[in-house]
Image (cartoon, helix red, strand yellow):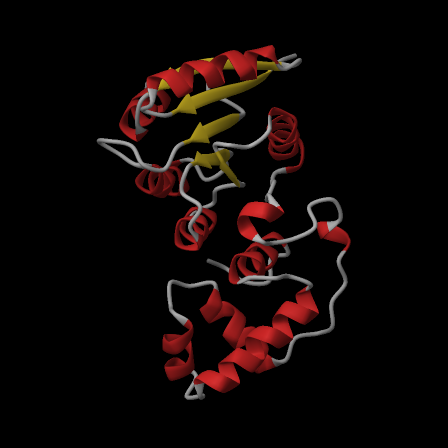
Length: 211
């Protein structure tokens, strides 16, 4: 039985090329190609067949990717979505992940890795490309063991999963920026991640913090 996909992207040429690529993959079928988040919402509210996965662009007219994920989180939190964007920016990645996006890919991704990502999200729930997010080893993420976190490290991690800058976190915790840098590096080492994005992803996937 085919795994069903909806593509949401306002770049017509790219969307049509993506349609052909996805349909060429064994076991995948594109149900619909839509131009923005509002078209997706209209589709879903019309009680049409819900896809197993939504491929979602970030920059779109009418309703962009972030606004669309905000709606999905509120109304269809179980719906799986995978960002596919030109935006290689930590802020966009963090916002999409916090809103429940199951992965974040750049549009120049190789077809082989793209297929791997589709299967991972549909079958296991998540896929995070280490090149984009500087995050985690995708193959063994659930098997990572880490030393217990202190109460202050847990507090820092919760703030790090928010919209706060590190400076704002330092102010909130009544600590110096240098001390916050120390917490960050300790957590990077404990959790075996390389970036804030990786830290947030780890916290979400291991149910350490709520975002």
